[in-house]
Image (cartoon, rainbow, N blue to C red; front, side):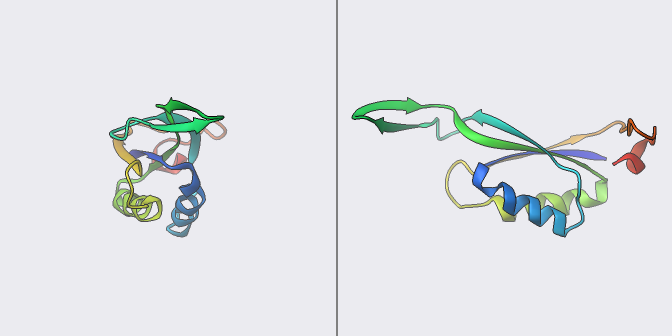
Length: 112
């Protein structure tokens, strides 16, 4: 099993969620996040004063899936989240040692 963590632009969340649902992934955890990468934020004008926005709003998706679904899930996230502009995000893939469903006590892939 693998855990996929994707940091994407907030307005792409619905597209990514729908695309993942279409390939059969049901469980997604979404967290609002702030951060920056290479773009290092940007400047904005507010009431005539310029200020720096260095932490941009992002959304973090966490998905745990079986090894055979990882490549499809990653390709789906990339296709749905891509705008072609800087700040589209990142995807991290981590190994998952074990999963336990609290309600039933199921373990492993059955608990996903």
